[in-house]
Image (cartoon, rainbow, N blue to C red):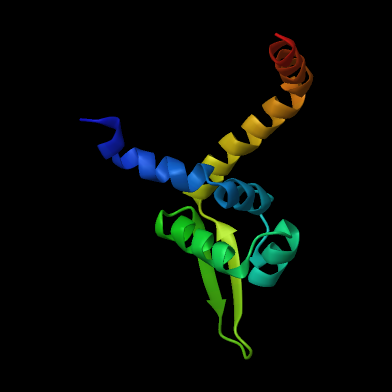
Length: 114
């Protein structure tokens, strides 16, 4: 089977998309987040992209959306166990990048000088 036809590739794209990565990291703290709080936390994400990314991650089983039976409607987002697993890997990668940033920056400088 060709890599382009691989179903895992679509999931990888969802998790590693610009907003997918950031959403999973924010939600990884274990708290329930309201849409408006997520929007404020991510600052530059548009409402449309946040909605689209949340729906995609919910469809993939990474995010749980709970509608509270109150008026006005109150919706909270949390990670599912599957989402926690994915987020743990992303957070570990973010920590690795932070720890190795100086070495990467040096490599970039060497490359740019060559």
